[in-house]
Length: 398
Image (cartoon, rainbow, N blue to C red; front, side, top):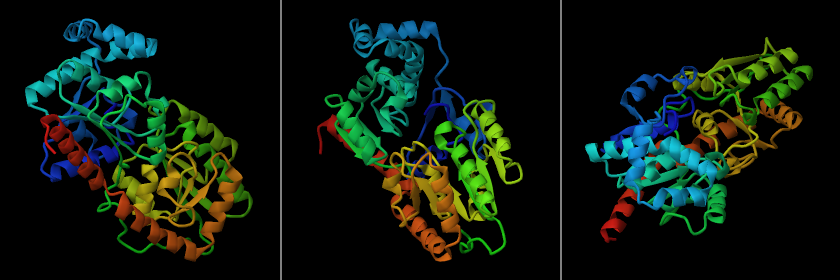
């Protein structure tokens, strides 16, 4: 996993716990540690103590790694995949050798990579050096994960893909370089912990509508559109309070500055708070206290944040972006609006906040949907079953 444990990695941790509760021995590897400002979970320290970090560039180890590859191999891969791949390979060769050595020393039978970026290349190179078989999970568009996708995928035992939309992209883009099995398996959430202790109640007449959003502070998450919608609601006489949990990838010195400027420009200092990266327990508490969860993403492969809100019985307003319609059917488990449309978003918030029956219906339907189809245990169970099938294929059994 890249930069584990980052602010959005709670579902990785849940899956690890689920695997261990099933009786499996799990070792954790990551490319490098996340920036300090993104280490926010109560379990982060324990996770880092358990994690072996492979990302340090070691020219000597990289040279030894090249020697372990077939004489014609690496240069040919570089020629086939292009200069960006050559750069990525040079940066990951020493990490690949470290991963291979760790697997040999600890008797690790299989490596699953929760990424298709350099972490996947690390596992693929380690396999070419005689290391453990590996598999991949695709969490977003292939274009987000760098060069060499055919090389990464062709050597894998299997791949899990979080949406049908991404599955179609993979088959169209990587035809002829796919592993023996590709299955759709979304990430999941801990529905045992993410639940209400008291029934959901909507906004009280004459009291502010409490909105909550959670996601990285990145332009594609649409927080700036949600702020604009908040300004419009206030101008229309709808009293709202918005809190946004999450931090930018630079630990607070990046896109956060632009959001702070946008907030001040709209005179929202008394109505909008940027909470930064907060612990999962704090996120749960904010969800329980909120009336509506809103995330205005421009692009969203699926949306763990939506799942967490739905698991807590919070009515959700989402954008019909990426794979989100595979998670939420409009007016069934939540409300869907177009991305980058603050006025439509404001109207959806206003209408839902004033419709108590709809709020209660979406609260119950969202919880039931996530509990049935997006439990964290399902991801762990899929990994175990696919690894078993891969090992049987290797052994020639059914």
